[in-house]
Image 1 (tube, rainbow, N blue to C red):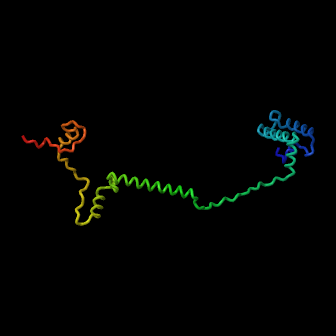
Image 2 (cartoon, helix red, strand yellow):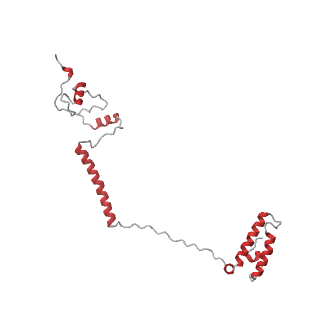
Length: 197
């Protein structure tokens, strides 16, 4: 049932009238209808759908004129026009962009000066060795950097001696002393350990 066009499918010439078209469709639809044919069902359904499409196109005068025009005019291959891609052009920065960059740089510098200035005002160390740095690397580096006549500093692993006031002095200072004041006193405290009776 593979015909070149709808007219060949219906067995008609392009000059066929509407009556001839209707009669050809009815006779072929009886032959290819899936319920009345002896053809396999799938083949009969495909042939009947092709007949319906041909009759639908040719039975309407507007669709028939458009179909006839498509038969006489050879199909042109689609022309694909490739638009050239624009080449990126480096342009100079505008005044607003320069101003934004200047503001950004000034903000970074102000933040840096403010941070370092506050740390210096509080007395914080500006350069501090990180805690994860191994003590052997620290001591080796500090001995290599130190002058020969200056003894190396004690490592951070040495024990710190307790305060001279002893344990009672700490409790006395934390409790507020004899006056019951919650603030630390700057007056020297006597230790309970050096009592002489």
